[in-house]
Length: 358
Ligand SMILES: C[S@@+](CC[C@H](N)C(=O)[O-])C[C@H]1O[C@@H](n2cnc3c(N)ncnc32)[C@H](O)[C@@H]1O
Image (cartoon, rainbow, N blue to C red; front, side, top):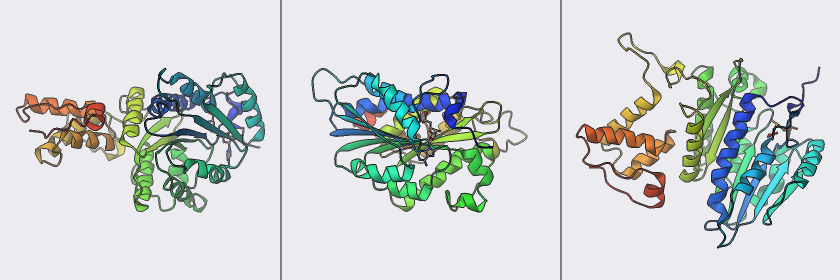
């Protein structure tokens, strides 16, 4: 019996959450570049775009991308950067449906659509020269039904500057079948040390280590999505060349979940498999509380010396600067700090209000 096509059934809650994260992130990302202070062109790639809607007419990634662009109204004065959106799907019929669907959307004068019906890797090779142009900002949405060859993907990412991506990974399948030879070509050398609930984070760490191997700096984060009433967990791996991108993605992720990294309970906010509560512990330590404790220890040990150090430490560990500020506030209350410095991303990184902690 042949497997049903993804778009022949209604999107489930997990898919809708994935698409909401995409929308929210793009609503933050597009305006950063639209005013033209940083780049001359914006490229958005939806490599496995589908026809635009599911069977119940719920909007898929292409329509969400177009809406995010439409929402990001440029200011009246100043120049507006042109936006190129590339829609691709191996299924030509889906591309034809999408093309007629988008015909009814009023196009922003500076926005152009491009359509192709190619295999993902062939499409990537074709659009690579556009991504590599000078002064462009790229956003890549990689949403396959199966797996992407990760080493190939990393080679491609390492050729790009000013690039952000969100990539779907079926983590439960990778976790279950990783030892099967056929799977090893997708994630060579990946081994898991935790349980299934840790899989998304371990996959993200694996991708980070591969990127480091190519000396490429991308800031990564992940969000794990459990399908309702099943043990199936998928993840979104996010990457950005800039700390600003990471800050924006983490704001979206923490807005979607109390633990900032999954739509399910992580046993008291921490990953279950790594926690061995001792008999005298009255409860499992919370993820955010242990982060506060880490900040406190790092500041006391002078390993974090400025507010900038603390902001970066928070973000690369998957937390928001505001959460680190809570730790600094309690240090001040305990008499360990004289003053709590500015801690928002905008003041510290953009506004360069860097202060030594004392
Ligand atoms: C998970 S769906 C993407 C859903 C889409 N983002 C949406 O919101 O509707 C994956 C899509 O990949 C397409 N596809 C399958 N194999 C492909 C390949 N090798 N290259 C490009 N697209 C492929 C399928 O036709 C399907 O529409």
